[in-house]
Length: 208
Image (cartoon, rainbow, N blue to C red; front, side):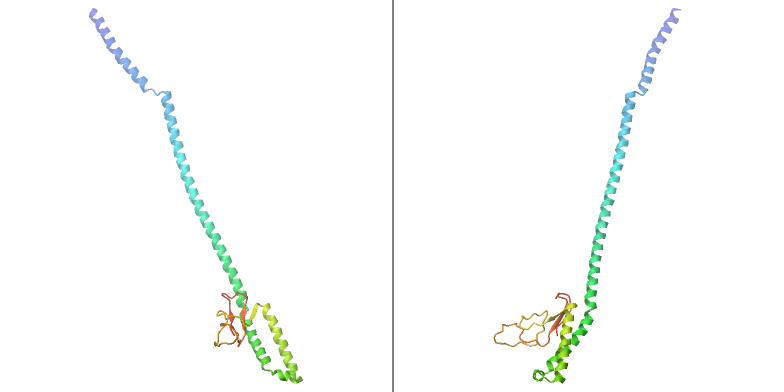
């Protein structure tokens, strides 16, 4: 009937817009290739950024470890050099002071020989007394021989007669004006001195 046709047309006309809307919605929900490509690129960029940040952190950590290792290495080198210098100094001091007692004992013998030769009157030697002249020569030879031994062990004799007074090497017994001598000049030497090794600082010597 005409009314049935009219109703069918109206229903068809009403369903058509709904169908178009459903198709449009389905089309819009479908993932487009360019959207997927952009999302993939963004994801890759994020991963690359995270990797770069991780590499930078690892690089910074390794650089800090390297600096710390270099500091320890330099400190170890300095400690080794200090130890070597101290060991060398100890060896030198052992060589120096190890012979000190021996040299000091020899100085006692040298003093006795010096006093013995000085106590002999020169007039009696000149007179040619064989009982005195022969022992005197032996004393002189022994004295000379000992004085030759001292330099071999770096033991130096100090005889400052006529030199300027040095408080580091000399001991003043008295002061007296002497004609023709400048003040501070050594005009009389009571006992000669000796110094072990030719270095005045930090080394023993005996003012005698």
